[in-house]
Structure formats: structure tokens, C-alpha cells
Length: 279
Image 1 (tube, one colour):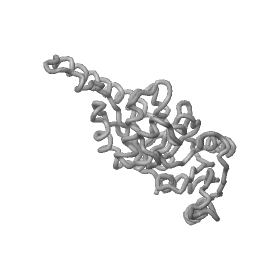
Image 2: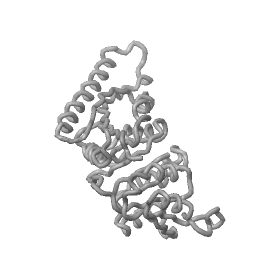
Image 3: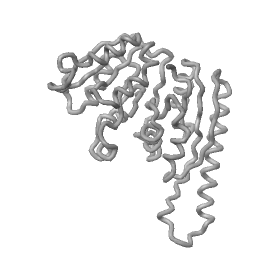
Image 4: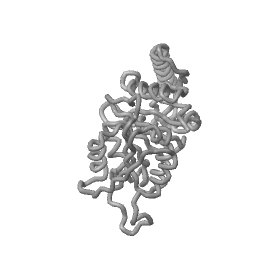
């Protein structure tokens, strides 16, 4: 099923424009509809305010967030007027404490959410919160677009990071509209377990499923010759000259990955191509 309902979230038109461009490209490619959430954030933390705090200060923060949302909405609307796709903007104001439930209400009806990389220069905690709201509360696949990159008109070569997990399988199912049109899909397996159910044919069952959907798939079984799985994946992406990486997100708890690191966080920090992920 192609992506017909595509959503992106813009907090800063200048910093997030590449994600908007990617969402437009995806909507045009699949003849889909683009929803743009123009987000103004009220960063007030009520727990830090003592009783009797001037209500004017709280009101001023809210009004500033509303003004930011309207300004982003005007910029996005002016930008999209020249595009040949159906689109709509949704101005939204939220406090950080209530951001996740508000976003989940909108995102749960999307086929895919297109977002900028949540880590790196110019990125705040809200970008990580938005990504997790889509994955964990909206239960929607997310296409993360690194700064300075775009989604090619035709995605020809895809690397699928496969580790037998439910998260990875969910990402593959979400990516089927893209995989079916790709010239090559490389199912990459790093250090498969010696006693796993597919030890005699790593990735064989997944390849069988993909081939039945008309996907041209092959399997690469790699040793973990570098300290982190993400490093091996990055090298494989370069070797295959891939346009897209498909992977499961947060196989471990978010707390563990935020403190100790993990493949999801490392790939989001290192990837130089778009990453489609699902949880």
C-alpha cells in the first residue's frame, strides 16, 4: 500500500525545510496528501513556578508560542503554494509536558511521518520528543532525513537492517511500498546467533516474504568487525551505495539507549541517508 497520508512537523522553517522537501517529494511520488503540523512550543515548566506567580508571565509565554505557530504556518503555506500536491497546514501550540499526547492524536492517522534528524547541532529536546511521540504513541513509521540530504525521486538501492526482531519486521512491512519499486534490497544481518531458528539460512524467511511481494532482495551476512553495529551498518550503506536504510527502532528501552547508547540512537547520529524506522 503506497503512502497516501504523509505528515511532517515543522518547528523552525529554516532548520526543518529539508524534511518538508522530503515529505513533498514522497507525497508527489506516491500521489499522497501532505499534512504539515506547524508547531509553536510553550517551554513553560509549571512545576518550577511557585504559588502566586504573575499570570501575565504564563500568558505571555503561551502567546509567544501561538505567534511562532502562526508564523511557521504562513511560511509553510507560502512555500507549498507552488507545489503540485494536495496539502494542508495545522497550526499547533503545545507545552513540552503535553506535547506527546497532542501529537499522537494527529499522527496516528498517518501512513508515515517525515522528520529531521533529532540529534546534532541546532536540535533540542523537542525533536527527540517528537520522534518518540510518533513511534511510541502514534505507532506510525518515521522517515528521518539527515540535514543536507533529500529523498531521491526514485529510491533504487535499500539496505534493510535485519535482526529477527518484531521492530525490524514492522519497519520492513511499513517500507514495502518503497521496497517493491527498488532495484536492489540488501537484507543485512550482522553476527546472527549461532543457535537461532534461522541459523542454517539467515534472513531466508524474510527474503521469501519479500520475493512474494515482488521485491528484488538479497542477503548479506556480516561479522561485527567494528566496535558498534551502527559502524558496520554505515560501512555497508556506503558499500552498497544505498539511498535508504530500513530498520527497527529502540529494541531496548528508551532509557537504556539514552544513557548507554544503542543502534537506533547511533544510526540517527551517524546516518548520511534517510532512515525509515518503526517500533
